[in-house]
Amino acid sequence: MIEIILTKYNYWIYIVLMMTGFYAVMAKENLIKKVIGLNIFQTAVFLFYISLSKVDGGTAPILINGPVVYDNPLPQVLILTAIVVSVSVTAVALAIILLIYKAYGTIEEDQILEMNKHND
Amino acid sequence: MSKQSMQRISHDPGSDITTQKHVIRRTVAKILIPFIQLFGLYVIAHGELGPGGGFQGGVILGASVIVYILVFGLDEGRKRVTEKTSDLLVSSGALIYGGIGILCLLAGGNYLQYNVLLPDPKLASHLGILGVEIGIGITVAAVMITLFCETVRRDDDD
Amino acid sequence: MIDIAIPLFLVACGIAVILMKDLLSSIMVFTVYSLVMAIEWVRLNAVDVAITEAAVGAGITTVLFLVVLSRTRSEESSGSKSNWPALAVTMAVTGVLIYGTFDMPRLMDPANAPNVHLVPYFLDYTYKDTGVINVVTAILASYRGYDTLGEVVVVSTAGLCTVLLLRQAGKDRGKGAEPRA
Image (cartoon, rainbow over all chains, first blue to last red; front, top):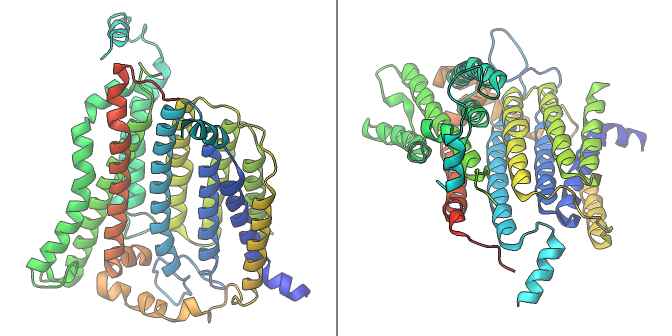
């Protein structure tokens, strides 16, 4: 039992971080808080991936002379693209929040749903 | 421009440096912005020798123009980087990337196969990767400037 | 010691961002979270990812959040009631994921499945094929060049979407457009 915890605690910390962001997206009512929660979720997933790429005694994957153990560069390439996608999603989400504010006057989700109910 | 912003410009207290507001901000920005841009270009160009690359350098270049807009105002900033310029730069970076691919097609290889561009395959690969990084950097810098300028508040805002 | 301190600090920052009511403070804690995440990338030897996270997360994302906060002028988040279905779903997904980690390989093992398939080829042949010594850049721009072309198109699409959403609205502002409802 103790040895299971000792070998897997890294994954569990990253899962707790992911679920923190996940809860923020679902349960918070302010739209900006939801976008912050989405960002936390995304960066926790990146942490999970890149922790798989580290090798015992490895160094950064920039080639130098001599017999050296390198880290795995492939997950880093994937996560670079994923960071770019994450900032694009954040930017478009914030632009939509601005339009929602202009149309409804508020960015709290329950007030927006109230106004929609009256309009329909 | 609305009537209020016209009045605000005409009441500007002149171009004398000692009577302008925010002297410290302007002076520090004028000194720092060229170095930020130089660092951004360094990060783009040294992407193959160390950490860095097109995307990181493009963000730094975009951040330098954002600092300029923050210190000197949106109208001043839009005079330097007009809407037309930033729109064109957004698409021309992607076009440079695709264009290098088509150049490789015309030189006889597959799409984005850099080592057929020149007789020396290693040098051709170097140049291909550098050109692609420059294209990525241009697009990302222009997109960062566009994102900031479209979302920021103007003077006659609600 | 620091290898466990940094992730725990990140968890604390994440929980603090959720629990805070003032939006400006949440955004500042998120910036600190982003910066400490960049330090964690350096600890994990992912230097390209570290410089990207520092520039993008602690730079551009914070600026965009602050700009939108200044325009929506909503300083305090409303007192939110605990959302029991959301908490239950979160706990269920946590349980499923932790159950999944019992099959995961040991961390930092050189014989892991991600480390043995293509990576020895990349590490041996990158300098011979491309002449570039940063393996991440070589894979990004040369071996997997199509994916990076897609990434550039995604970034320009984000700029295009923002222009389409906000530019006409910005020009119409002087004509007295009023919020509906």
